Length: 207
Image 1 (cartoon, rainbow, N blue to C red):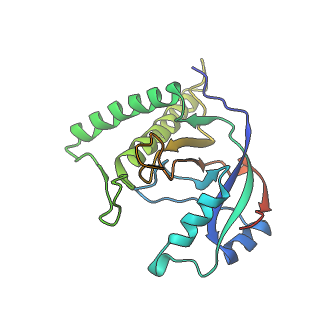
Image 2 (image 1 turned 90 degrees about the vertical axis):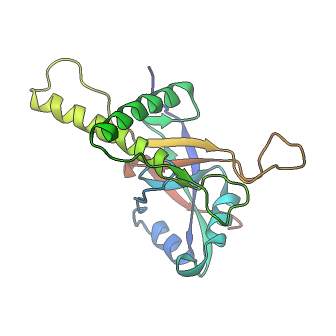
């Protein structure tokens, strides 16, 4: 099974203007480690969609709000990508779910679930604790396999390489128009785990 995606893509990161300026000056993007992250851990980008990145940054409320919302652009090499827009990617994630569920059962632990936010009228299950846990489990399994392989003297075929990025497409936001099969906020996100995959940062026009 091939899991290599060599394409370069443009991603847009929603943040505050002060953070954007630091990123443009060379500061590293911060990895998100929330237990409800849609694609697991990583630095998050909206693929080819600066408007959606800025919209997300603008809609943050309360203590999490940005004083000056901004969308900073990045050139990303997807590298070894867990691409959940492909059949190979979702099949691998299904296998990870089976392994994760077995471990939770043996340990007498509850399965996390994806939940709706009370404020979301579209019921898009914005809190993705199950998805996040399954993706984290896949990353950990790969790391454990590689540790075991090294401990055994790195003999034989190496286990799969760790993923550099995770990519997924998400229908969201309700019908784009009455009766539509398209949803208004459908988007593709990328979580970057390997910082070296971010090849450049740029100021997005009109942000």
